[in-house]
Image 1 (cartoon, rainbow, N blue to C red):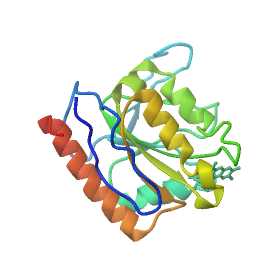
Image 2: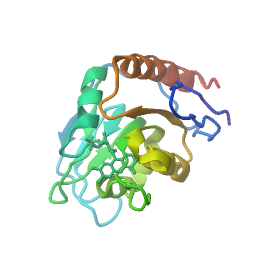
Image 3: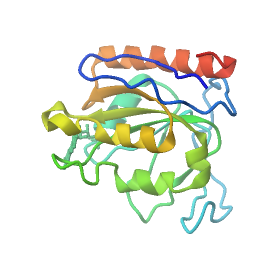
Image 4: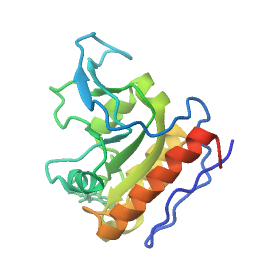
Length: 191
Ligand SMILES: Cc1cc2nc3c(=O)[nH]c(=O)nc-3n(C[C@H](O)[C@H](O)[C@H](O)COP(=O)(O)O)c2cc1C
């Protein structure tokens, strides 16, 4: 298995060495359905999970919406992991890249938002993740974008990029270009 380095960023080191899955490599699909509720009942354990998504980019963003604003600027088809536990989590039905902010504080405890943990507790969602983009704030020093590192390591997929808050226009360009390259390489089984 080859590693894939998609994009670089200035502030922190991207770790491109994590092996990614080679199964179900695919090409970026045309803009598709986003989230569709099918009402098919529970999937992957006790969590109800009937909101299927065919988006290649899935993200979490809290009420402060920084990550949401960054994703909107990318202009790609995307699906947002629900904020409230009363809402069903998503069920991915194609490979995707996950974008998530860190909420650990200086201790790093609880860095991965619980909504993301709930989403990744669904086996199908874990099996379809292909890469991670981390968001955070450099004011947090050592724990900058820690949640991205944690999820990438746990799911053995590459951490593709890190950005701060809602990202700069340069971040947007780099992530867009990087994702295109990433999906193309995966579809062609290239390093
Ligand atoms: C309570 C709290 C803890 C945070 N902890 C971290 C942290 O450990 N590392 C980091 O890089 N950013 C941390 N952040 C910054 C957020 O990751 C950052 O503001 C992010 O843009 C929030 O995204 P969202 O608005 O989409 O939820 C923290 C923010 C808050 C409010």
